[in-house]
Length: 59
Image (tube, rainbow, N blue to C red; front, side, top):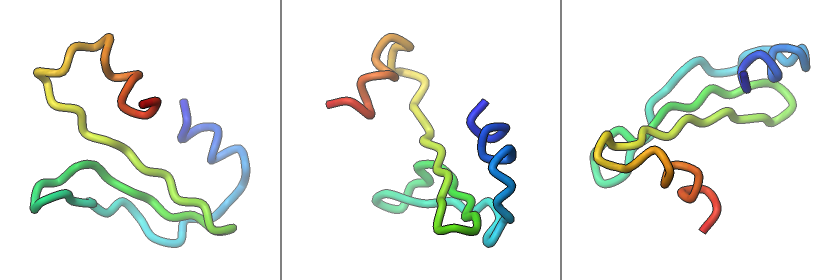
């Protein structure tokens, strides 16, 4: 859903998908767009309960 929203803005891709890491482990991916916008994903381990996913960004 977020990617379709970004596409609707009409920004061009400056840098395609690239992994980002924490302590040597891939933690997600980023894609950079024009107008200084970066879209980032976060890999959530399978042992984290679905109910806790929302809390990761709101602590």
